[in-house]
Amino acid sequence: MHIHPLDAYRFGESPLHRLDARVKLSLVLLFILCVSLTPTGAWPAYVFLFTLVLSVAAASELGLTYALKRSFLVLPFLFAALPLLVTTRGSVLAEVSLGGWSLEVTAPGLERFLSIALKSWLAVQMAVLLTATTPLPDILVAMRALGVPRLLVAILGLMWRYIFVLADEALRKMRAREARSASAGGKGGGTITWRARVAGQMVGSLFLRGYDRSERIYHAMLARGYDGTVRSLPLKPLSSTERVVLGTGIAILFSLLLLTHFLG
Amino acid sequence: MNARKKQESAKSEAVHRGVRQDEGMRLASIRPAIEVCDLSFAYPDGHAVLHHINLSIEQGERVAIVGPNGAGKSTLMLHFNGILKGEGTVRVDGMEVAGPNLPRVRALVGMVFQNPDDQLFSPTVFDDVAYGPIYMGLAQDEVQRQVTWALQQVDMEGYASRVSHHLSVGEKKRIAIATVLAMEPSILVLDEPSADLDPRARRTLIQLLKRLPQTLIISSHDLRLVKELCWRTIILDEGRIVADGPTLKLLSDEQLLYAHGLEPV
Image: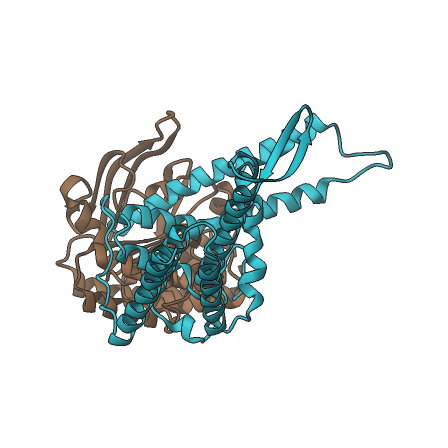
């Protein structure tokens, strides 16, 4: 069994790994909702949410820094929140001149920006923990249980199944290109337009192969009785322990939300 | 061919014939497994692939379809369960492969595609093997039983929760066979079953196919596998049947083999 870089799942036997995917997915979605509903600048609430992330990370037995390290992928998205620094009204903290413009960084702007940064960072960490401790097929089953349309779940399943096949195909093509990228003493490599054309052709042939494959997969589905409706086996009910975990999780998140809103 | 080889092949043909005669007596009253009458097929772009194919395959027979690349082998096989529809008729167990019969025909004809990555399209091995039984409308516990049974048949118990991408080609091939065995078909159609397999995986596959009681139709370039598994061989070239007869006889005709892009083994 080889681990594919695209597969976020890390094998383990921790309590978090063993917990039913339906419980995990519901709680993670609620956590993200709760984080996004927490008001701006509710610092004690953020600390509490962070301790929640840390305790879940501890329960995952993947190490406390596992999700922390992977959560930095949220950084590029924070650029979208940067304008908040200068567009929110309030007491001016600093003035930045950019070209002919002078921009004012305000205290409420900074508070909003930091809140958004922290909140997205917390939400991403929880999502990282979910995907690291739950195989994607289980997440798909959980999505179905939560009422996501079956067709969408089936499409996500096919996407996940074939993204590896497609990635391997692309890798083989790139290797073949490398293998023939020789130079006869000179600079070699061709012009940039020529190289762009080669890359374009590679993408094109990858698309065509994918298209052909989709046809063959459809044939394989038909051969086993596919008739246009997506069918699956009924799900087994949650055990009483799983219900308790789910209930406790919901209670904690809900009380936190109430506290932050009523205590300001 | 030297004398010893000749003697061996005559002996093995006699054994095959003996088996065939017993089967013939048992199955005399049963309709042919597959009957193809005057089948022609052209792709929508006008490229004609099959020309006036006629053939009949008896219940329990093991037939190989061989021929060069592009001869139309896979296209012909896709007609056996109605995925492609050409001019002429195809009957499976007496039923015409068309319209309302398709679901029943597809339950009777198990098709194993050449590339297991095309056949195994579900997230896990269990989902893939359960796919056919679910579409056949079996109850949950029956589906479970069929999956366990089919995985046992191909010696892959314990693989149910595995993800197909992590399996070797040989393992994927066997799971692909399990996905159709779970539907308990009476006819198995295999496209290039030994392609991409290393010698050990190929041997395991041959042993597995030998054990199966179903009518087998195998398209292959692997003539040694054909010789070992099939009593009868059909040579297809440029969309036409150019020879149909006992495997050992056809495979010893060097001229015939070379004329149709094949090599004697």
